[in-house]
Image: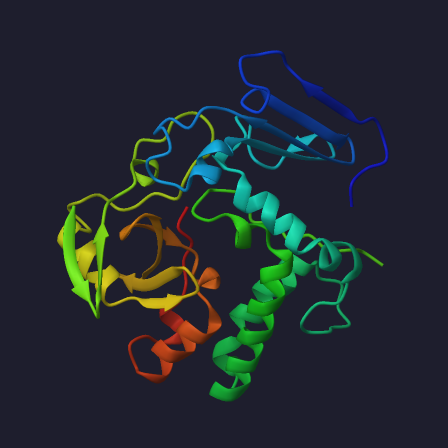
Length: 160
Length: 110
């Protein structure tokens, strides 16, 4: 998933090593992740202490395009990083989708298709399909770790 | 801030400004509707009647799904989520109770 190109890791000098944390890993031309911690504007009032310390900006680069938008996604990064850690194995080793298909749809398109065709299924069949996609999305949909943040609606999984 | 009792525990709803408009540069939290659409009183009711899964609570209002998280002792705040982020067991419970239909479960918070 991550590119094998140049890696860049930096820590700027500052009062607190943690608060000035900045890291970029990967190759923006393939896949790169960039994270920067900044001060929580609410001083930790609406989050746990550890979440508040993780307030920062995330950028995800795919083929030179920032999926988080030109200004990145600013939110508590701890839940996202925990999501990556919790689902590391699935992200790198689980390539199967909940529903197998012979068509050439991308995982994202297949999820949309599965949702769109729910009304044509019996209640039991629709329920089974929803359960499968929900469990699968917990491991592969970045937004499963968003915890209220606006991160891109992307699915991450091994290809091939 | 509003306070109510649920069982033996008291929980309070306190809105989080990170889920209020206007956004700053950079994408931040999902945006709650304005108070004219979802009042503090209604938000408190949603919290009181919500389904608890792990450390989060879920409910829906006007076609939108909401999640609430604690941010202090007995303090909770809520924010809109995509229907797909509502645990399947909760959606199933609402469906079986006739509170919603599958066609209602559409829409993204942002």
